Length: 296
Image (cartoon, rainbow, N blue to C red; front, side, top):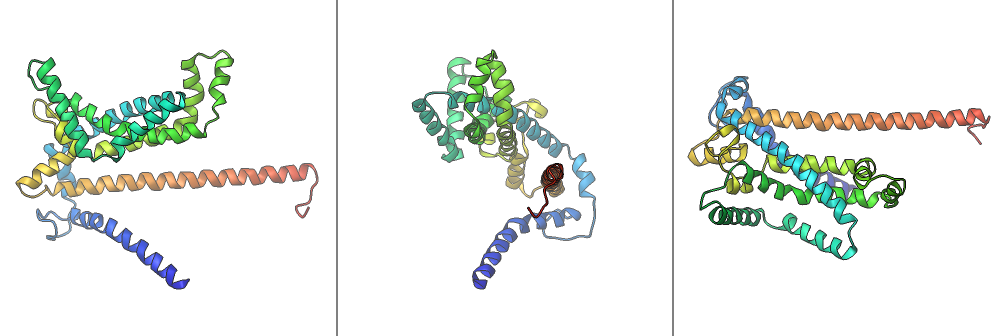
């Protein structure tokens, strides 16, 4: 028993070490100005102010955040409404739609990227007189196609947990279908929608393959091809080394995510303790009201 426990803890800590050691290594070298990762030239915070002065990185960061935010909202709307519609369809069509939704999830991302590229080229040749239609809009469509199936998978369990009679009861009480969805269904599936929104934002934030195949000119890049953080890093690696300011940006992103996760965990723990305390006080009041001894 003790041997199994030692092996289990060793395995877990080894996995955590492999996951976080490269990140901590990058964070450590964000406090030195060396252009070569792994070469220490003295402790310094200089990379952090230099990061905000680097127009190329700031432009790529802005493009990344804009695309991720818009695609997350659009994907959540389409995926959420689609999940509601499929849930109330007949069983045969629901099964078919769920199986179709699984294909983009398990399929290789390169297949989706190449398929979208072929489609956009075909549309440009046959409907736009041979002109290229690659732009922000094609990139947005690509990111939405990537994220919508995952939104559906987050919303579906919440719909299954919901009482199916709630929607019908709202309709019987005189509510319109739109109001019933807005006031009854959406509050019930809100955690799933929020999870889908965050997952869509994350998928778009670090996507490279779909972005590389479907991007064009627009956003903060103006008439130039859109650069996101992933495509910028890839282009810099091809030419030489990654700008040292990227180490500072990586550190800031990691710390931001860490603060959000820790803050949310603390909030959940405090809420649970308040609920437990409130339940205990309520139970004690009931005992006092009926003069019931705790031993009874």
